[in-house]
Length: 72
Length: 365
Image (cartoon, rainbow over all chains, first blue to last red; front, top):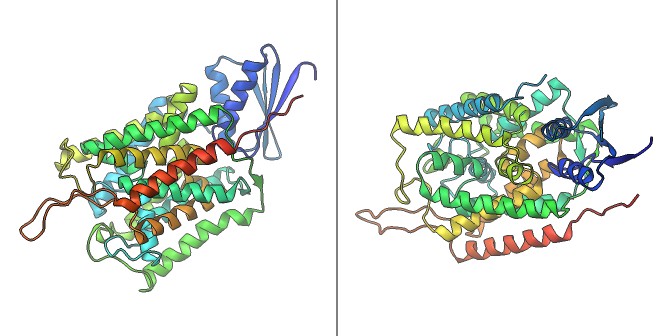
């Protein structure tokens, strides 16, 4: 997987997933981050935040879970 | 489908909810309550005889509608997910605290905005307290506050609250089992069908646009994200126009219906609500929407609010509305009695205890 941080935000209340992802990006510059989420609104919030921050990301939906990969 | 992906669409969705609230106020609900979640859960608690304050008892179809609207749209769009297990007892407590704070101020954040749109300056004091409370909660969120994760549970868990509320509404309509006020705010009732349909539509929109009064300020503080506040802006404008047209828009601290001018307690009451709402992950209205889309934790928060409302009225914690003097009665300053003031202070202490004792554990990799 190379330089990749994994973040599990499943089941957390708003806006913890967004804060955790922002903190992880700040603490690990230059690293890719793989966020696992399980709520549709969490996915939307994360994608919106990443867009605002100018980050490239891809989202994969699998069995009701969302795997969002944030590029470095 | 991204229905609300721009600020103007979000504002428009808030405007629609505001128009629906205005329709309900016009159709018989108390004018500056319209769709107040705290007031209406309090009325439900009264209808179920959990408290016996005669002027605030009615099984409000609006609360049922909000939950049902969210449930219906979440089911239809595949966003329904039954979850549970994120500190339920703390959430119950947060629900109680939110309700006690709201009833000291006399209104949830939604009614606070409605009161602001009618020129009630006390609500602007309440708003300052609410924003401070949200800021306090946001500070702890930034420091790693969490109530832990919820887990997916069997789908039927998420059906319980929508089904129970629907059943209770049917009982309320078809039988004389529940109490319905004959005077006071509880007696001011929009026709059931209008109330239910309007609330279902509100629930559907709010599930999609994520309307949250605490979240809108929290997102600005934490992420400089102004999306949710656009919804509140739209809602405020709709109610402002309604109040302007109906002649209710008068800026004053006094003479406002179901309000008091005890500034400190308006401030602290809403501080309590803002703080608790951020810790609970959403304002009272948002809790109903989350419960509708399957969160048992939010359903527990709702139960906390219901019990909190009963406590607030059974033990004299709720603020009293100010009254002008009449020929037979002296003027009443209103506001909370000593018990209510003590309750608010205790609630704030408990909120700080919850905030400092629930921290995320950082896993080092």
